Length: 374
Image (cartoon, rainbow, N blue to C red; front, side, top):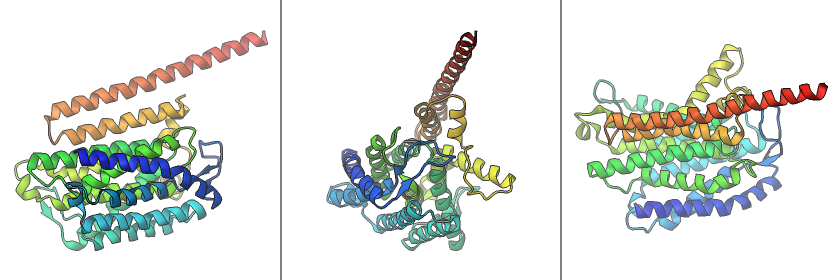
């Protein structure tokens, strides 16, 4: 565990130091987010935050390669994840600078998933009525779909300063905890690509967050959201490929299903936002990728929540689903549910308290206006 913590720290420090340099470069190259009607930010802001994350990941991998435990995680799968992440980062950079159309971005995401397939990273089985080994072509198609969905879920939730960064950090922490504890519980090697890349993702998010919190000095952009989404999806699929589900979980299907289900649990908030957005736009006869101002964070802010409080609420919502999903593999289900309920109550109390304050503030403003008229 110490080596993973060191890896996380290195990634965080590198990202924190590199981000101002990337910000200056993005401003020179005009890779910026201008203020649009649907946006929350009020000033033109640099994009390409994903470049700092990618650079930090690459440098971290070079630095920790010779560590005794972490060094054993270097494999063909790890190379495939980094190359696919590099490709999708490039697509995101182009989109941040030139605003690519949706079809081009989807094609790029599909090609990034194809790189994973080339390196042997694909879904091999599903926990349906026991364990079903998938035909190669079905597994490949499902892999591409999972990668694209998770990439776009992270992309869609990137609408407030620090929101996507924090959600991904929480999600990666839950996934790291699952993959590491799974190795401890079942005697697997603790040196695996999923644990290593999720530890790096946590570090990059922590290092990037100070620059990305409101008021943000730089956005991660599509380069960052697509990069992080692909790495999370690839880590989950890689972990599934390393598990002999029939041998290890022959009597308990729950833990066997978690490597595939966990990314959807920990990313439930962005996935819900993605699903609602697509449904909303299709029902209105618009493209699923047509922008609007009705995402979950927009709704919360319309109730009177500030950006910071909205982020806190959605962080808690993510943790409310991520932690119980991860813990359910290792502790009694009632204990995991208790954690989730506690976080839910905190999230509700935070939201209600702020809405109440907002209503009181509006009443006070109305009363003061009435007194001025008199």
